[in-house]
Image 1 (cartoon, helix red, strand yellow):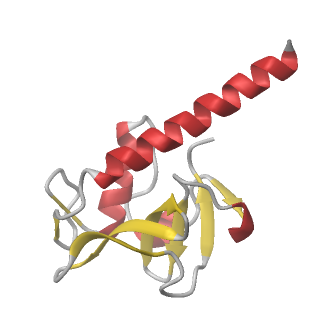
Image 2 (cartoon, rainbow, N blue to C red):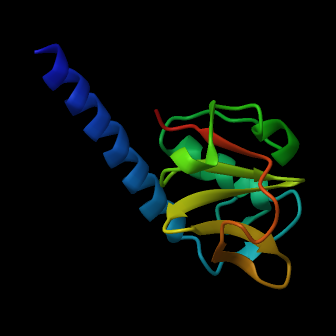
Length: 127
């Protein structure tokens, strides 16, 4: 019974991570505005905070503080829905080496390659 319960909880968590990724993708094309927290314009950490909050997760407001949220996991344990922290920047991992993030004023929220710059930390927010 305990094994079945644990498997069900794991499936629910991964299901929520999939829902989080799907929700985050709805914002691709929205504009990047420094300091903006949604729902039509975001900066990088405003975007991640907005998406996680939609699912009941409270994370810090700025990228340099979000690196302390959730649980640290190694890059080889990366799963969709994880928060990827870079120097002064954050993104949501989509799977298959891809991220979604509020990139810049020029490009807004877009898809990208997870390793486009050095990764400082991977944080598991959705347990």
